[in-house]
Image 1 (cartoon, rainbow, N blue to C red):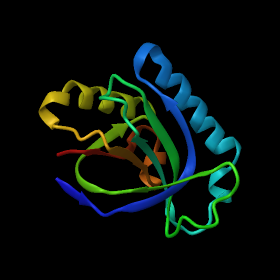
Image 2: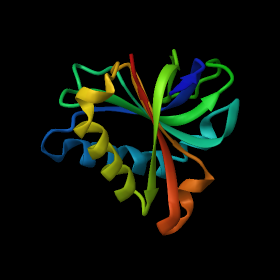
Image 3: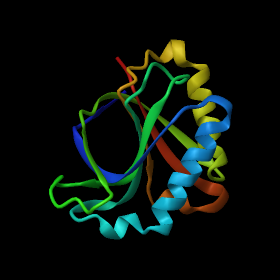
Length: 151
């Protein structure tokens, strides 16, 4: 169990769901925009170079709609560039999973494992997030940390 301190993120968002391959399409497009529009260069006050993908505003559980925000952790939510979204998250108790292997397949596989354990994990469905550090760019030996909010 990890206790996560409250944190602030600036980035871009989309609303999606896991039904009928919608998330794969929507999230793929969001990641494409993130890199094509060089979102990171528009964000001031970045705390580090780790990219966060946050899943929040859940309609229900992993079967309902949710919002994904891809961005960077920042020191302040002031001076937000046009077209970007600024959000503050409460943090709290999270369970950490590590997606290891080739990306993005390893992340997809780890989420499937998380969903299969949904009843055991006692998820809060407030904000879950992935952290893409320098370890996420290591080819077949990549690692992405996934934090799931729990009660």
